[in-house]
Image 1 (cartoon, rainbow, N blue to C red):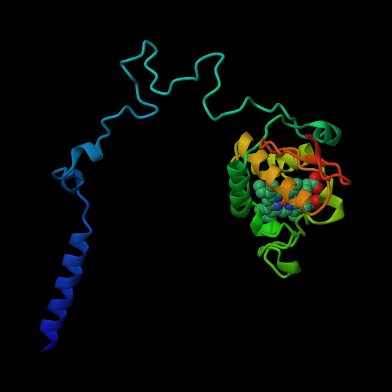
Image 2: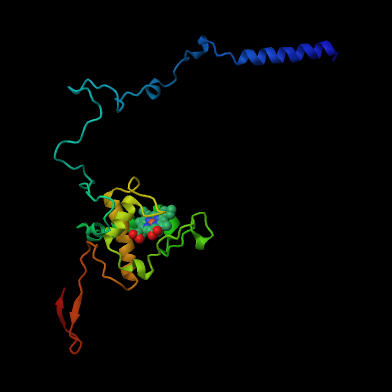
Length: 217
Ligand code: HEC
């Protein structure tokens, strides 16, 4: 190839290269739409005007005085007063399924720091060698064994020092399910009785001399 041909070739490549970048107005018009109902929603989008309602709002506010199924009333716990935290509690009780769900949520959101064994040594902390420098609470430790559920709840809702809030990841019921999971774990380790179970536990009181059942509680 002689010099002139190579110069011409390079020139062509440069000119066509630049031309291909042209995004003139013609190129901005879309071509044929293959599946229009995927491009243009047939349902009303959340913030679009809606002719079916007199106020034209597509997003409807909840009906006054009602609570959506599966939701709880707001908890009204305000950040700051640790004495209020201690006294704060719930009347919610959970069945075995829900406790299991609490455990699943714990392993997703908390286990990374607090450890799946609840020993405060999750992979992020890893005995001080992990990426997270602050030591997470060890739920097996005496310091946490009798911790009031309200204090735990406040830690999940507002965070605690280096621990962030989990309020946006866990709704109110889920927070309590996670706490009931921690509490049931702690009670299995021989401390406070577990009181958040909805499963009725019958305990037979037996006359040890005769072997008769005296009462069932
Ligand atoms: C990023 C790491 C991290 C994650 C994830 C995390 N925590 Fe923590 N948590 C900590 C640290 C660190 C502390 C110790 C805070 C302190 O006392 O300074 C702590 C403390 C706590 C305490 C004790 C609060 C107190 O008042 O002393 C509770 C209860 C707790 N966490 C529950 C949870 C629950 C439940 C989850 C999951 C929803 C969770 N944590 C997720 C790091 C974490």
